[in-house]
Length: 269
Ligand SMILES: Nc1ncnc2c1ncn2[C@@H]1O[C@H](COP(=O)(O)OP(=O)(O)OP(=O)(O)O)[C@@H](O)[C@H]1O
Ligand SMILES: Cc1ncc(COP(=O)(O)O)c(N)n1
Image (tube, rainbow, N blue to C red; front, top):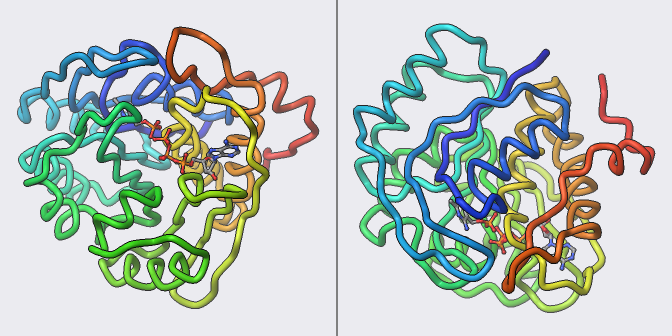
């Protein structure tokens, strides 16, 4: 069985972070492993508190996995502090995993900062150049390029600027713009739109985590980058369509593998 490793924060509510990643890995048919960078006390309404994990233990978690178990793809989520960004980047430089999917998580739905302001520069300089693909949403992309994105044309030029930061490929997610949630993939040569239809629901907690983990799972299984994104876009759409009205805020996506399989999506090699 192919494997994927998530390096991210824990969400006690189970909708985003490590918990969403592991569910997405399982639903997409890979063996999931985890390195926890921070623990958030979180539910569907709020992030109540955050505790960063010591960098020695973050490094140990990475080393102990890579020293023993094959890692077919890595997904990176919440990194919290500049020191964590550096620790993770240095370790990945050492182990050189074949695929690195970087979701540059910055702020929770409720507005809680999951990446400190002073870590943004390290993320740009140390982490983005290591990535096979980065998957920013519109607000994250705006921070990374230092400019506004309000239209499809803006998304095209933002992708070019984001790629100049050093990632091999950029998937700019359009979920935060008005209208259809269309995502744009750019590999330095051509652009591909992955169009979607907006599902009317407030239960979209963890959509970014779910999507990036599904991409990592598909890469781990040997799909091309284009196919990995295409399959993952299909997966997130189904996971939002069947999202769960749990809690009083934004409920989580639904990683219901049977549903995915019955929908006729063949993602096995
Ligand atoms: N209401 C929706 N209906 C259908 N697809 C959606 C909807 N909202 C987001 N998406 C899709 O879900 C994926 C995640 O996109 P989004 O822009 O929401 O990421 P994110 O901002 O990182 O997630 P979050 O808002 O949970 O932090 C993208 O493929 C996006 O197009
Ligand atoms: C620990 C953690 N990591 C990431 C996110 C963002 O989640 P998403 O963008 O997928 O909704 C979150 N709310 N909590």
